[in-house]
Length: 139
Image (cartoon, rainbow, N blue to C red; front, side, top):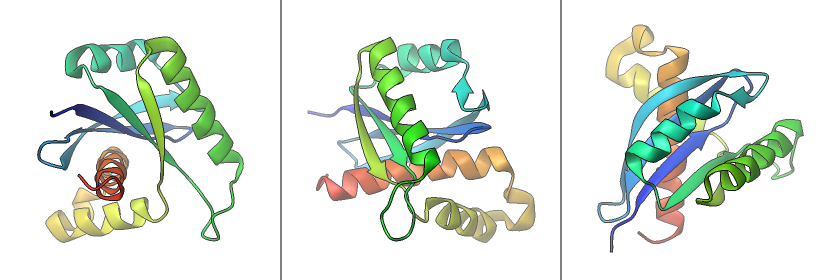
């Protein structure tokens, strides 16, 4: 059985989105959605959920390097809870430490400084969150 997954890299100004498939254990960046102090346009997210029909939403959980939570961690949890409450889709959290650094490195390697736009970094970070969730779940 193959499920479609959507991954989110939560931020207060931008939320990266990626889509993945369990059958191939792969993901690809989709876009970055604008957020106003962490509040997204829920209609845009609803449209993505309608289009992709995901069985599961994976939300990046930003942690300090020592594994402790910070204010943005609590906000990401709240975002995850709201996604589940609004759309009724199962939600899981995934440690996202170093995904932004890894995303910047991948984009730079592919296209230099010109490839390092904020939207691209956020979308690739969401891709990395999804890929790491699939790796951790042996897919």
